[in-house]
Image (cartoon, rainbow, N blue to C red; front, side, top):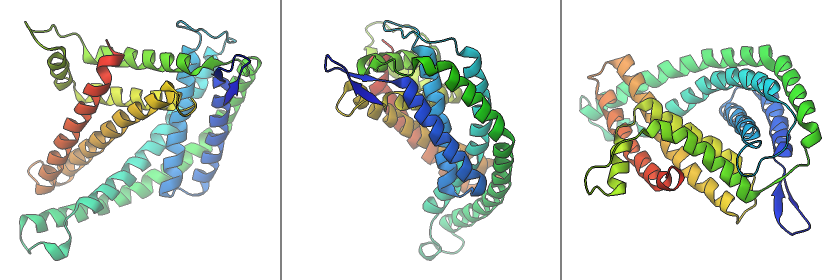
Length: 311
């Protein structure tokens, strides 16, 4: 939460922001235990990511050009992160199925507009079968999620209390929004640079062309890692006030996150269609086209963000 200092410079209190996210997580877990409907699962998964982002920020605050003096908290942070990971993965399995069934429904040709026996009709039938299969999986994964939440509820609450108690003396310590942005950009660069690797520029090669070559060589794991880093950075800097460079950076990180998420959703759906119907199925081919288009857009967004942050 932002506070004004005597010098009229807005300072942020990241530890208080973490506490607010912990409260939101507790509420999201309570809702998801009683109802695993689409909105509840989405809220739970997003909140776990936001808490994770603030835990990452907590680690960053003690380093860099603007270090913040904090009590020793690493063991408590690790305990929370470990339990969060289990919940996030369980919620992610359900959320992915929600997204996939929705994408299938929106993309599938309507029966009224395709001719019987045509390619479009075959795609429609294959999409219907795949969607029904995924909906059945969703029911199973939702039950697993509830079991995980019930299993982790008390232990996670205890781990969170330990962390809150440990960092409580530093709750009022603050940083400027510019320092927050610096931490987030350093975190993103640290995640992106290893994924990009080092590719020596060709003779007289434009730097943008070199970046494009590096982006084209990124494998699925690297692209996914950069997307997740952008998501965490977005959640870090969203605590900054409107109109600040940090808050403006949140929109850039979100753009990369959304484009990367769109690509990843189509990639997973393409793989599911291939596994379910076979690699030569019309539906798998259709989803491959969508995946490639989404990947091109994702690379474009990355080419706009990366030069500044990984120079």
